[in-house]
Image (tube, rainbow over all chains, first blue to last red; front, side, top):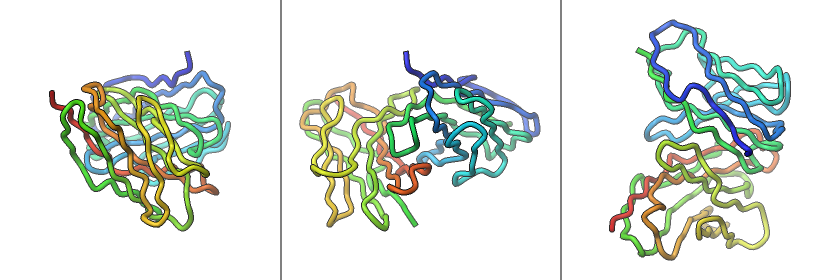
Length: 113
Length: 114
């Protein structure tokens, strides 16, 4: 089954404790992206990757890091989380970019205390 | 700057009634246009998309959308709403030369009453 898998679904952490949210897709997609969803703001792009070893900033990259060492995986790293990063996070993948149909993971609800 | 506006934050319709969700965009040229749906606790699912050609596009689950260049709009419609359509709906645009950047509207939350 074609899918984007994010883990964990829920995460509660404390300020400053490094964390990683994993994202994996099984569709051999070149494009992957991370979004955060906040009430009244919709989805905003954090980082995206057009292919392996190619990543770039989206609209709200501050406080986040990503890596794309393999085509299937695109982890989101918060080196020192802060409360303003409490949000619902989505990973997405597509064949070539946002102009194609994107497949979304089920989301990760992060709370930073 | 490119932007997408969904003026209705929350809409309630009765089951069986028709539905129209509004979307306006601001872009230098005609972008690619999308509607995504987010069911509770789920990720987003593509309902339909417009690239070019016929301005009325059909999607999944009985939805359709009409692109109106003169109004910079891409409104989503359904003739008869089912209770299972209760969800949040997002309009999105991406530039034809910038497909790395999909811009979402703020979403419209649809409630369906019996």
